[in-house]
Each structure stands twice: as structure tokens, then as C-alpha cells.
Image (cartoon, rainbow, N blue to C red; front, side, top):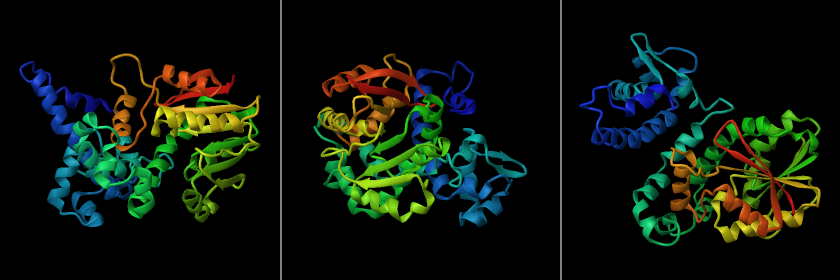
Length: 348
């Protein structure tokens, strides 16, 4: 979060204004609306259109098809938070807004579009219901579980796939900074998605080979863009609850376990253990819940899990308990440069 954004939530330095009521009012009025403003900017590809140049209001409005006065109001709000800069010459990208450029390899464009999506909005409108009733509120709103819904709704599936690809971008850098893959040979990415993460790891380590493993419909989509993936990648369709193939020395679970209940996580971990040989390893990348009362990204991501899925974010102790039940143990815990924690797991 930028300094200007943090300062914004402090209202101002006048003690008459900086009261608990005004601070909460600022958070309610700004933070909730900021998501929608950023999503609008992402959908309009404002960061792409600005790129490295300065554009006047009229030029930017012409490129986006927006009404100039309405666009000015959006840009004014975002610029006040350090997302885009506003001057007499026009508008430019800032380090924050540049992350919305869809052409960047580390872009957050897809994630921004998902977080402002209809599905997220409708689920969080009923967060209070999610606290009182069993099961994900998503299922009650849409009549079927989230992943089943994605199979049926191609537009929502595309938005979510883009979000996951977007979210994976920083994960590649985090993984490479946290872990030395030189001792590995064959990687097996369980619940791999479209393969961007594993492609990035293989690019950094030319001796590695890797396999993407996901549901058949995901692998079908992977095959359609095979030319964009590392040539040392193969892929295989399947269901990680039923069977995970053997043959790799390093298995990866990245942002998979938090989607599922404890019983389901135990199923996945036991399938991983069956696939692993005694000298193998399992790399788990997740957001671990902090034990203190400080602001924590994982604590809010946990609310997404609460409303959308039967999963949750977990503490290190919770993962340790589940792993032990699957005949696995945590050998090392590594905090990555981003929000992730890597658990290096070995057979017991």
C-alpha cells in the first residue's frame, strides 16, 4: 500500500478530524469503493493506454470511449491514492497503476477484474449470512459450487483463469527467491492451472522438466496455448482427490489447499504421499495466518474462502497437524518476499 493511500485513511493531521468515527468513515467510504474504482480502471485498460506516456483527459477519454468529465472524476479519486498521477499536463502511470498493465509479466490486471466481479460482490453482500449458515454462501446464491459454476459459465471461468494467472506472476519470483531448485529434477505441479508458474521455474533452471496436473477441462485449455509454455513441460488430466501419478522427485501444491476443507486437504495430502518416493519432497505455497493482531493479507483472503468455498487460510500449526496425519512432516518453513510462505515437506 502506498504512503499516500495509508495517509488518506488517517484523514488529516487535525485532531478534530482524526477521530475513531472519521477514521472508520474514511475506511468505509474509500476502501470499499476503491476496489470498484480499480476494477473499472482495469477493465478500461487505463494503465495499458498510458503505458510510459502522459495523456490529456481528452486523449484518454477518446481512447477509452468514456465521457471526459466522468473519467476525470475516476482519475481524481485514484490519483489521490497514488494509483495514477494527475498534473496539468495530464495523467501518467505510477508504480501502483503500472501493475494494472495487462501486458506486464507480473500484471495484477486479472486479479483486479476478479476482485470487482459480480460474483465477489454478491458473495460479500451476504457475508453476514455466511457467518450464520453452514456451507459457502456462493452455493446458495448460484445454486451450485464455485468450481462447478466455472465449468458452466465460460465468461466467469475466463475471468477467474486470468485472475489466477495474474496472481501466479509474483509467485514465480517469490518461489525462485525462497527455494533453490538446483537439486530437483522433475517437478509435478498438482492443481497447476494454466502452467505459467511452472513455466517460470523451468525457465530459470534449464535442467528441470515438469508436468502440469489439473482437471481435464483445464488441461484442454492448456493444450490450446501450448506454444506459450516451456517446451520441457508436459501435462496430464486427472483429479487430485482420486489419484496423483508418481515419478517426480518434487511435487508442488500452490494455492490449492486453502480451497478445501480439512477432510479434503487430508485426501489431497495422502494422494501426494502415495505418489512420492521416500526421498521426494512436497513444496506447499500458501498464505499462513499470523498469530498476532496485526493487519494480515491472509486474514482477509480467508473471508473469500469463507464465502466462496469450503476452505480456509490456516496457521502453521494447522498445516503441521494435517501433514502428520498424512505421514508427512515440515522440514523447513520459508517466508517468501511476498505474502506467501513455503513449507518444504518430506515423508515422515
